[in-house]
Length: 285
Figure 1 (cartoon, rainbow, N blue to C red):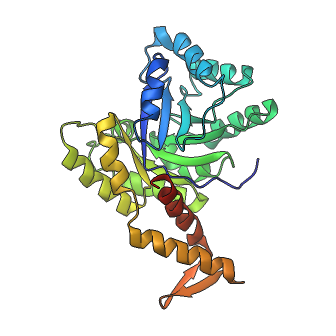
Figure 2 (cartoon, rainbow, N blue to C red):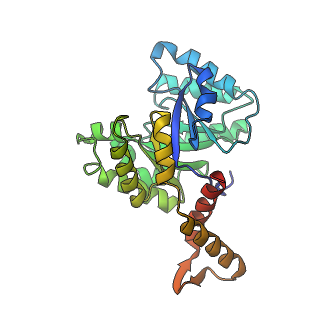
Figure 3 (cartoon, one colour):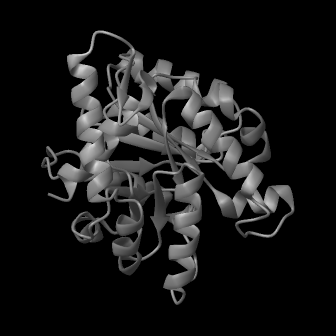
């Protein structure tokens, strides 16, 4: 697998139930940067096989290049439903572009799936949810387990239950920070858990701003009406976009790993963030 990850905006995401494929176009039109077809928590066990078949059918036809990233959240690889999901993906000639893996505990889970996808010849990318105590402990190794990984997602609800703490910003600050650290070390995007109170947009905005300042590049939503606020919070300002263009141009013209702009030394690792800012600028036109 190539180690050149595509830089793209991931300011917001929304789930679309695999059981109801008719909702997929509405989710794609919601304004979210990522639409995730749901096969895990949002699907009852009795409906898993139907949702799986319908989700696979969505990708039987080529998807338009509309700027929306498409992902399928499969079930945990340590459960029979997760194994069945993987078997269905390996059996199709038109796999989803990316998979979201829940409840990851060890890097071995990622390596195994990577090997199976490679053997099958599928280019499918991976997005990893860190929502278990074991996953949090191993997050640095998990982040480096495969060059297919594009992003780490922080799962606050399950994490709070595992850590026996309140599902709020302050009690989960250490866990969030550890996931951000691992993502940054591996050059991955990092995306935060949805805000669950639909009637508190001010609270969601406040939490989104806090996680943005911590290093997150986006946050999940549970309803389309949350997406506009999230996109606004995680969209860089005009000044930040202009600076990103200057930094990228300066490095293109320089023959070194660092440049000086406005009297400040800038080193090459910041380039990925600059390209992400320009990717968001292109997305918003």
